[in-house]
Image (cartoon, rainbow, N blue to C red; front, top):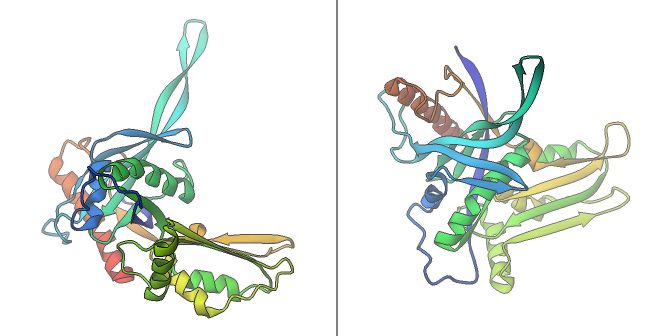
Length: 303
């Protein structure tokens, strides 16, 4: 049966640690392949006391009907552990037990452009929780193997930011977080400025806070647009505090405006990116169909 699956567009960035490690490996080519060692071992990890696991990740190969670059995309599931309360009937009573309940979402890694396209599901958590889970699971293996930190952020069109600014009378606060220059080719003005600061201070991120308690904060196109374009590529976050719809204040954030794509498919629950489906050929074709739709969205919106 056909259903619509919604996916978030995220991007991961790699920033070299200032303190070198003697036995660290050079980044692979393309550099986005550095995540493979973190996702292909089905290991469990914890983020803020919650257990997660990467499950069933492997390269998706193109088919006759689904064309995309070979070896570029890896697909699998990011799973979150919950405790399910189950009532079992015994003679004269109902006994409550707790059992593991893994909640999965489909995730696709683009090793060339460094996108992570991950399925949305309210049972799994918010966009922010999904992003932090991905970053938490990737961080230690990449730091250990390549001496690089990894950052995962959403891709957000700059129009969202400027629509918010232009549609409100009062701006109380602007907060911008920028990841230091890494291997992606993003806005050159912002990149050059961050590179100069990186060489001076050695920071991983830069945080800019602009505040006006009266709500008269000015947001000029220059230089703010340079930073918003940098964030648009998944290399930071922004938040803007304006007047609320019914008084008070309201904070708008890039995390709430992440780019999304909808994919229509006929994939049954549990029948993708793994060996649950006894018909391997059909499963492979479904995987390739989803990836081809994602690839089409990447070419349309980001290339």
